[in-house]
Amino acid sequence: MPKNIAEEIIEAEAKARQIVHDARSEGARIVAQAKTEAEELSKESRQKYHRTLRDTILQLEEEAEKESGSIIEKGRAEAGSLVRDRGSRIEDVASWAAGEVIARYGSSKG
Image (cartoon, rainbow, N blue to C red):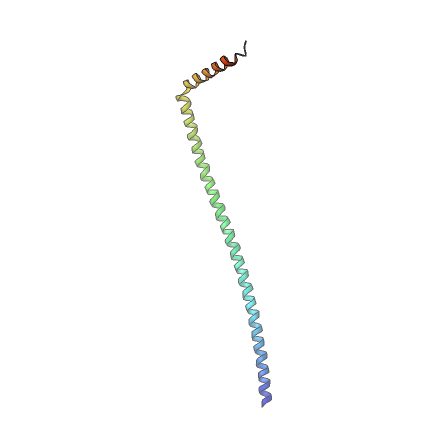
């Protein structure tokens, strides 16, 4: 009878070793799978962030382009208004400056 018990113990130990080996293998497989899934999720998240950032930048550039056009038009209108309002003064100042230059340095005609 002791021989059967010893054989049963040896068989039980062998089964236990196999169970532990299988559990370790399964654990390693699960860890590797989880790592792969985490890397994939991280990659997808990064790509989504870059797409969102790129779309936001493009939208802001379009808005800035529209706004800059209206600012440029407003500036042109103001400049035109200034020229119209002070056109005679511009001619007077230009004549005065030309006279000062001629008086100081002389005329190139003579």
